[in-house]
Image (cartoon, one colour):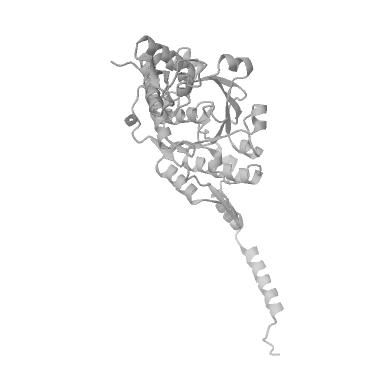
Amino acid sequence: MNDKTVSLEEARRQQRTEQSQDQVRMPQGRVTQNVEARARTDGMFYASSLQGTKPKPRQWIVHGLIPDKAVTLFSGNGGIGKSTVMFQLAAAVASGRKWLGRDVMLRRAAYLSAEDDRDELHRRLDVINVRHDAQHGDYEDQLILWDKTGSATPFLFRDNEGWQESPFFCLLANAVVDLGIGLLVIDSMYNFFGGNELSRTDATAFMDCLQKLALEAECSIVVLWHPSASGLESGTGTSGSTAFRNRARQMLYMTGLKDEEAEEDPDGRLLRVVKSNYGPSGYDIRLRYEDGYVVAEEERQGGLLDQISEDAKTTFRREAFLHCLDVALHQGRPPSDAKNSPRYAPKMFSGMPEGRGVSRRNFEKTMEELFSDQQIIVGSLSGPDRHPIKAIIRREK
């Protein structure tokens, strides 16, 4: 063997020695500085850097209820009116009007719907506009509606490396950032979740991707979801893994009244603050669902409702009643004024899309007004068997 030949083992030993000597000669703090530089890009900072500065005040889209740059869960059983009240929030934020009697932060708002299609969103906005004497054009480009009924896709998908953002979520996130959306309402969670509701890992991944978007886009995100049977029984409105509630900064729960109260006031609602990381929780706000619109009791006692024209509300209800009447007659379902009839007009109309959310109670009042004004009468029509039947019809002029 040549004297200059060095074995592989000796060469590696020599290399390790040289590297060790280089580390000793390395200026003190160089390795630390590299670590700090990398860590700062990941959010690390020294508490001492806050010396002499004041924290930014916490921002709220609606003070005490909807925090800014955070995810809020809004729970409620099907048909309770949660989509209605959240659509009202989006419209209020986009226009600067009050929501449930409370001031809002004026922002561009977007309503992502997998529950109600374009036509239903149109009908809901019509109801809101009647209440506020507004027109669709008043919102300009501040209110964005996104109809995903029948085509909703999950925000995340799982591959060998874990949960990844889906192409649709990337499109949504880019839209939120590029359009400067300050409030995003997602209706509802289960149309965009795609994971196992009982899995803590799946729930955490979903909530974290939304919270990341809220921070990066400086946007408030409200996610609608449905409570489980135990969530309904406990009054918390929760469902699935506790990670959903734990990762949310705020949680609201909308429910109906109970027992005797519900019998006396079937249109009454409660908005419960179940969780708030930034304020008090465990209290209720009394609401009422009327004519496809949700109002707070304090509004009824001297706020927004006092400013809404009674004539406008009466006109809205009458137009809805007469439209339902025309549709029902065209469908061959002649309505009756008899309460014990399966064709009782107020009950029938309150369940029709053309009823525009007007309650049975208000349709009963409207029906009596229309009879009194002789706009409608009880006439005779030919039934399916050609025998005459009594039904409500328009009075011929």
